[in-house]
Image (cartoon, rainbow, N blue to C red):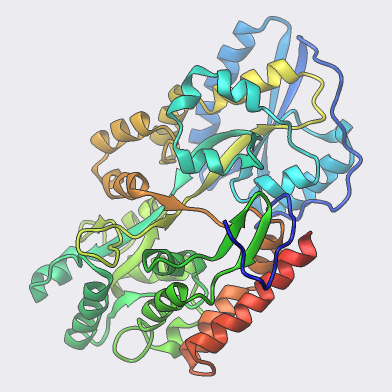
Length: 430
């Protein structure tokens, strides 16, 4: 893919939320012990007991199949994982053998030499052929596999069925209809946001850019340049930022909102629509709108199309420093197998990364259907660059959106400035 002349830098990795070390003393272990204790780090969830129960079942079966082997699982807080992973990478003796990590963490961890290349083993695993392509992309760096997808998460359009029925509305089939429907709701019911949106909701804005043919960046193989100021991307930015204002979601209230804020508002009955994830289902069910909402895929530009969504989720990988390579890879596969992913869906609502398992989940739980449809329609991911961590932490895209929403800058000027910041991040990461 041709890069813009503004930047062509070689990179190797990406880390959005993790702060992995820039240098590391870890190295690949020459040992492959067939017995002993395997250490596993998994994320601690809100209401972790169901997850523990599902994992305990996998561990019991694994220990039974591998005599002389024990598995010790530790659940670590997501918020402090950066420090824990940094320490593990710098001191392999304290590192786990197997670890759960955010799918945007993959390339950053690879750059820092922490994850084991499991390309051969993953390719030989009979179930790997059925894994979601985008989920596999999230464990791939420069064509090599560094883990196995654990679950995937996407966003769709939540809407109030009672409000739509009262006003004689139908779920929007295009982005233009989404905007006009939002305005109609707010006009008829000034106390409601038509669609609640957030100026700090990056993953809510991205589908508008992608649906209009834009990209965050162009490149591959570690070489990236920003494309956020391209004509198509600007069209998407304009579509999203047009949802802010007195006709729908006042800038004074909505410019600072993030994704959690928008779902909280919708669940509290303050909006006719919201962009939320499959992972938002529990929160909405616990809110005032329980029994009065439904979900459909976020519409694209053309009638009947589905806007590309960001494919979030987590992966499980093996650390390069493990002295139990064969056992650790086997455990990774068992923890991310079809059977385990089905059990994790039942326990935690995590969407499986296998299409057939996901289809079965959708048949059993109707709320999954629009998210499964969104995944099937095609999802997108962030640039595979270590610079993305800087772009994310520096709030480059939220700042761009908020400058437009506030009227401080136009779409062209704000996106051009954001593009320069992104290129600087991509360059410094090299």
